[in-house]
Every structure is written in C-alpha cells, then in structure tokens.
Length: 441
Image (cartoon, rainbow, N blue to C red):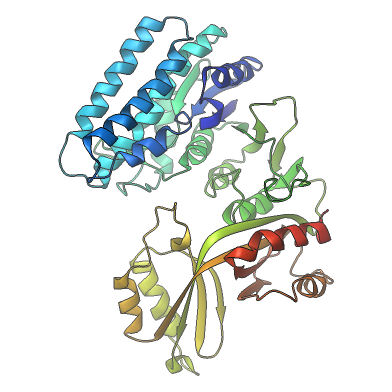
C-alpha cells in the first residue's frame, strides 16, 4: 500500500491537479491520497484571523480564495454540484469569521477550510482519471490532543480509527494538516503539517511506502536557489534526512520522519511536475554513506546566552535553566557550555513556527538567577553526513575556508550526522556556496 501526499503547488491549479491525478492513476497501490490546501489559501486564511482587518480587506481576501477555487471548478466535470458544495463552504467560512472570541480553537477551525475545500474539488478531478476515491474527513482518523495550533497526535487512536474508516480495497482522499481532539474540536498539526499528517496516516495503515509529491525533484545537496549546481540525492538514510529537515531542509517537514521510522515505512520524495525523475528514496540503510551528503541553511536564528558564577563547580544550574524553558514549552536546538556560561539556539527563532516565543516573562524568570543576553539575525549552517564525529580532515579544511567569517557558535561531536555553526544572517548563503563547492561541488 502506498500513501501519496500532494502539496499546495501540486493542487494549486486545474492543470496541477491533472498532473497529480495522472500520477495517482499510474499505480493502483496508491490507496490513500493526502493533499494540502491550494497554494496561497492557508496564507489567506491566516490573514483573515486579524481582529483589526477592515471589511474591505476581508472581502478582498475572501474573493481571492473564491476566485482561486472557482477557476479550478470551471474546468471540472460536474461543475454545478462542485460549485454548490464550494459556495456552501464559503458561507460556512463567512459565518465562522462573524463569530466572536478568536482563541486558538477558533483559528484552527479557520485554517481547516483550505484542505476541506481542495479535497472536495480533487475528488472530482480523480474521477475524470477513472479513480473512484472516497472523500474521507481526516478528523475522523487524525486524533490529537487539544494543543490548538500545534496539536500532538494520539498514535494509538489514529491506528484504531484508521482500521475502522480505511479499508484496504478502496481508494481514499483526505486532508493533511488537520485533525480533531476527543471533544470533536478541529485541531491542526502546525504549519507544514500536511507531510506529518501523511506520515501518521502511513504509519496508521501500515503502508509500505509514503510518497511526498512536491514541486522539486527530491532532496538536493543544498538549496538549488542558493547553489544552482546543487545535485539531487537518489538515496539518503532516515538519520541524514532527519538532520537535514531539522536544520533547514525545506523539502520535508521536520516531524515527518518520526512516524515513518516507527512504522518502518519507506519515504520517497519526488516532483509532481516531472514524475519521470526518480526523486529521493529515504531508507534505513543507504548503499552509499559519504562523510558529507548535504548542506543546509536555517535563517532567522536567535542565540540565548546565560551567565552565572553559580555554575562554577556547582550542580543543578543546567537543570534549573532547562526547567524554565520546559515550563514555557521552548525547544532547544544547539547547546554549548563553559564553566560559567551556556549558549542555546531556540525554536523560537523561526518566525513561521507555532512554538512559544521567547517572551519578556521567560527572560525575566531567567534573569532571576542569571545574566541573559539575546542575539538575533543569525543563520545556522549545518553539514549533514555520516561518521562526522570520527572522520579526520573535516574541521581543519572547514574552518580554514571560513577564516574570514565570524563563527558565533559551533556544535561538533554530539551527532555522527552533523557539524553545525552559527554565523551572521547576511553571510549564511555566501558560506553555503563556499562550503558546497569545497566539499561536494
């Protein structure tokens, strides 16, 4: 069984939907199709959440959403029924916007309209390619907790509901990104969560392969927009792919690989625009294991440095520091320490993240027992590969290459799969080009 996920650009126009439907039709093992909202729709829905939005601006956004979907519907068969369904969804959206009390629960319901709209249309496009797919409400299967905006999946419940609602002899079309809690409230898995949803579905139905169809032909040695000579990678391990996604690789959502690893599901990343290209297969063990496989860049990083003489020859300081961060649900990426200082990079640096921000409340709590310094406008460069903690000849050439740049923080040795360092925001892309040319190009 294959679970196939198509992103927003792969269903953003009627032509894109045709391409995606033709891919589904090529293999009868593609039994569960997971799709995103049409490209641009989620951003429009997010824009609608602002309480200060004027009526004219609101109407402009709603018209943009309406025109985007009606232009696709106009090229479909069975237009009248589709149009009626869609306009009914638009009425629901307007009613939802008129409600008072815009808490996170309200926002999750708002964001869900994009996927619910796109899947109703794509069911019809699949029919035109001879695929009788049953529309499945993801919220019946994707059970989560009630952390609105960034819900955590309930793995056991998902498997149980998948067995109930998904039969192996049928083809289903469902939504990425959305789920529901035990009270029936709509939840979301965070921005970019469609990949995660697809992986959770794949785990829940014991799929053999999870396909991620996107607008790029697999995973590259670095971002081709930065380095045009970047090369596609035909095969990569779960460990490498996980490091790459966490440290800025934009092809996969960072959480996607966890369910795939748990469920022993192979992952294939390929281009819906050019399905003839082989894409990238993510497996447990790769045929080749180069020391440096890829280079990633993550911008908008923030460095938190805390300093206290209480650390000197004392125990308990780190525990106290991480207790504060855990209390505010702040995830730590990289850590370096000295006798009296600790430097950390945090998920709060990602502006598109749903993580809790590094607020004044957090900083004041930390200042109760240490000095605090916050540095912004940094970039994280990561070299991803194998045996990096035990291979000689990496650090010397790397830091000789970077002798003209200020390296703010370095992490090396904690993982065999990466070497990471922080640099000033404006130099990140320049450094990626240099490092790629030296070690891969």
